[in-house]
Amino acid sequence: MGRLFLINLEGNFYSCKHCQTHFALVGDIISKSFHCRYGRAYLFDKVVNVTIGEKEERMMITGWHTVVDIFCVTCGSIVGWKYEAASEKNQKYKEGKFILERYKVMGPDGSLYSPDQEDAEE
Image (cartoon, rainbow, N blue to C red; front, side):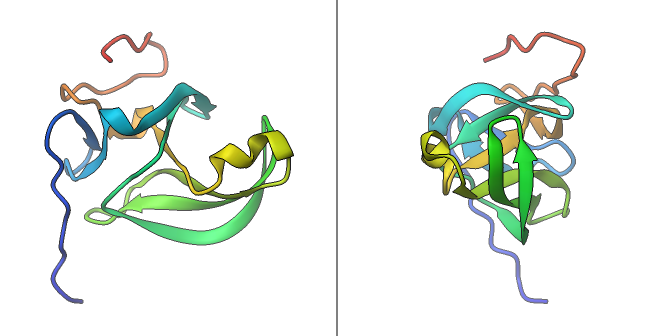
């Protein structure tokens, strides 16, 4: 295994709750109105320091999507998924975008999210 090169973000960003690896800037959030098994999930335009899993078809609330899970490049924790393709025309805007599950990342102020609390930090 070679040397791991990480991208360090400046400003307000989300990071891995296990190892604090940087993932995405607050300014790259497209929407905070997504949901996952553990509560809130945010749609991002860009995410760094992740690796991707295998493509798979998943039935989601908004229909069938081709997605890949995304993992922290440092510790390997699953942190969300990337939309590869959407079957519905009105869902095509998600293609190439990333979901970070709020429960699996630290907020810009270092806060953790619990599904039973209201997320008011951002």
